[in-house]
Amino acid sequence: VQIMQGFGIRPIVLVRNLTDIVMSLVDFYDEGAVMNTFFGCDWSELRAEMKRDAIIDQVMPWYIGFYVSWQRAAAAKKLDCLFVRYEDMIADKVATLLRIADFLGLAKTAEACRAAIAKAEGDRTKTRFNRGVAGRGATMLTEDQQARLRRLTAPYPAIDFSPVGL
Image (cartoon, rainbow, N blue to C red; front, side, top):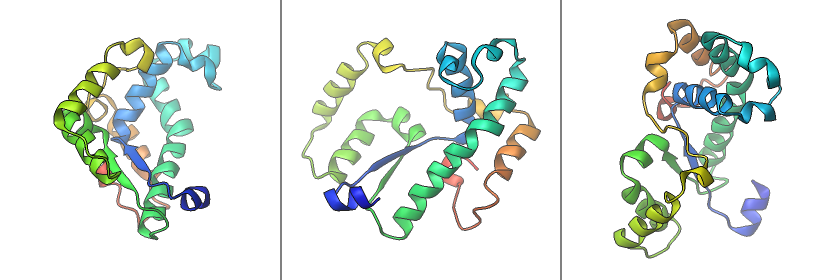
């Protein structure tokens, strides 16, 4: 925060529905990224439900802490942050980029945003784009898994988790 304050950086904070993050990480790890984690070679031996449990128990506390830290920095007016919901971005990429450009004081047209999107999406292997499906976590996580995810937010009663689906 202090470095950003010192350099006048106004961050764009991309957030996503937490249940969808769980599913996206399972996919990402199944595609091979698990080798960069502590799950390593054990991952492929886990049942689907156990993979989701492992993500909820071991990884999601970090995501919740990430979200809480940005919310607190913004609420305390330490930084001027723009929160962008992943679900809004995939629903209307051009409008989202225009909103970001406006926040940053950049004069961009819808056509310029469309061109930038087309260029970025030209080779999905370079972006490591996963599936990008919104709402999948709510249908694929069990009620118990969703409850455990909600319980991870209990230490933060002043934080609004509705933008990330809880």
